[in-house]
Image 1 (cartoon, rainbow, N blue to C red):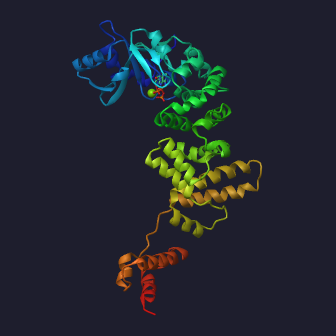
Image 2 (cartoon, helix red, strand yellow):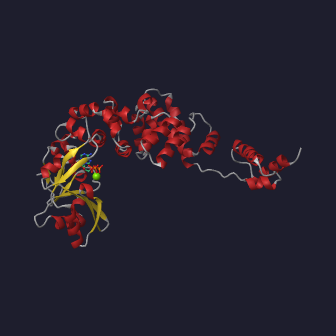
Image 3 (cartoon, rainbow, N blue to C red):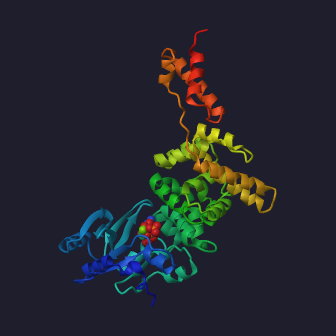
Length: 419
Ligand code: ATP
Ligand code: MG
């Protein structure tokens, strides 16, 4: 019998309290989903989710009786979050899907573990753990854990038709947990239903895409997505430029210990085109911060490897460092890749590395004059004030930010003098 009893998260006293609370009076609770899957794969467990035969109202009632805080986080589909000593646990009543329109399911609560397993998406996500830590498998999930196979439960085509988001979840879980080639039946079902992705809400699509792009190495999953025609449905912007830059980026991330960044991966796959990226951000409903990231990337100048430090500083001042850092990381990754077969690229790669280090530690210098100085020098309020200020700022930038305030004031006074 496979067991997760030795896992530290399984031994948490908070989880014990949930078992004591709900494994009583004829009811039952089991752990399900990601925590079991990850533990069996030797990976850190994320959130610990639970499934129970108790009705959601009963879960709330029993929690109240035991002095445990409960929050009805998804009461419509039977989810109550129990918070014990600051640790949240999602407890969902066993369900089976009774109707579906491909976007949301109508559910019935029940007490049938097998039916609850069967309405889940993939076999590796439908393993349960009981109070003793024994793993219970109704769908062949343990075999698929062993071979790292992401497999739909039952007929792939039917499961995809119930919820088209599962197309993206197939590639997301493959990116994180799959090995070798994706399951052929699943891949075919996803390819055939790909145009239905357009019927999903942008939020759901972006949430899954983001998780996929956050995998340690999403490269293979992206390749299969392109192969299946799914990538073009979600990110048509990648069609021309493609995902060919991804392997180089992942390799650079590993070498330089860059934290996996879903937006940097996205930037590597799309053209730096302000309008197209703005439209993409709107379509996928990216957050303000995410849209701004892509906008800075698109607006940043391409940096030549031979660029002098002083010239880089000027670019940094004019465009800000964030977009330029993205450009430099991508340029460095591409140069390293080329250097594998072309030693002449080694120097280029080294140059990008040096420029990136400089951009990383760059701090914006403060222009020592303001509009008030211009007015004080006798230039009357009006458009000329801004023009004069810009002229002096340009002078200061061109001299590498080294002109002192006194010199700038003197220069300002000459400009203000009539005639
Ligand atoms: P993660 O580590 O990303 O949280 P997870 O497996 O917990 O992985 P969730 O998206 O949190 O994934 O979903 C929890 C569980 O609910 C899944 O393991 C799966 O059993 C089920 N599930 C979630 N979304 C769907 C869906 N669209 N169709 C069928 N089952 C789903
Ligand atoms: Mg989860």
